[in-house]
Each structure stands twice: as structure tokens, then as C-alpha cells.
Length: 225
Image (cartoon, rainbow, N blue to C red; front, side):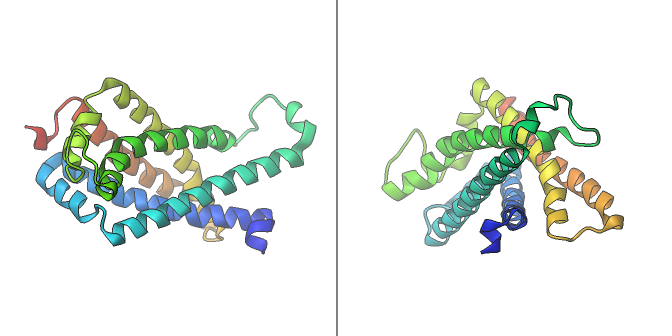
């Protein structure tokens, strides 16, 4: 099948899964912002998205998208390096007009993956998983507000999450317009426009996550007053 055998096919898979993950991040960011204004409202969302069958199915689908995206990223990186062969050692300077993020997508991907594992441990493990298996941690599995407070009261976690968010920003600042280009949705006129749209969108998206982390770290959210 050309989607799995050809380089273009793999890029299409990467693009489709990447856009789907960006849409999820948009929902996740909107959900997190609610916690800034009302802990009760945020917990109602957490209860709605707890260990219900539809939430579990959605989580499994999301996990599948993430795994496919990661696997194809490694496959493309391996193929590109294999195609270059020894020539990769002949160039030490970054090519002109090539973004730093584009040259370091694998490194950024590894940082994002490690951050994802930390995030799953801090929240999914203590919330949805705990509700599924019937265990109880320091707080109720549906008390997402308390878990946010607990996590970001730890300065180490705050720093790690800031690094994670910055890495995602770099990754998406390139990945957004690259996905649009791969899917053939940008011509000569719209190429620069999509880059600007993507940069603005990704910046606002990651700013929403960052604001939540810092607001809880410094206890300056309205819901904490």
C-alpha cells in the first residue's frame, strides 16, 4: 500500500495524524483554560470524560493516532538518513532558509514523547486509569482540579512542563504548515499565508497551556483566589 511503502505516503499519514492531534490539543487547551476560572466546572468536565465508554474509546483512538505518528516519524527519519548515506557527515552548517525546527524534528519528537509519558503519569494514570481499576490516590480520580494544583505546586514539574510546551511549539510551528503543504492545500499564494496562520495558531495554542501551568505554579488563577 502506497501510504506505508512510499515516502510521500508516509508523509501523508504523518500529516493526517498530526492535524488530528492538533485538533485534540485545541480541545485539551480549551478544557484546561476552564480550570483558570472555575474548579467545579473543570471537575464536571473531568467527570464527563472519566472512565465512561466513549471517553475510553476516544482515548484508545487518540493513543493509536499518537503511536502511528511517532512510528512513521522514525521510519521517515531512518529512510532520509539512509538515503543521504555518508553525505550527512560532509555538511556541518545548517542549510540556508531551513528552519531550526525542521532540522531537529527527531530531537523535538523525543522530548515531546518523554513529556507525554510524564503527563500520562501525572494525570491519566491518577485519573482515568485509577477510575478504571478502582484505585484511589491522594485525590479522587475525578478531581482534576486538585491534581493540577498538586502537579504544578512542584517546581520541578513546572520546569519540565515549560520545556515540554516549548518543544511542542517548535515541533508544531514547522509541522502545521508542513502538513498543509504535504496534503496539497497550499499553492504559491497560500504557502506563506499558511505559515503565518500556523505560527499564530500554534503560538496561541501553546500559550494557553503555558498560562495554565504558570497560573497554578504561582497561584494567580481566579479559581485559586
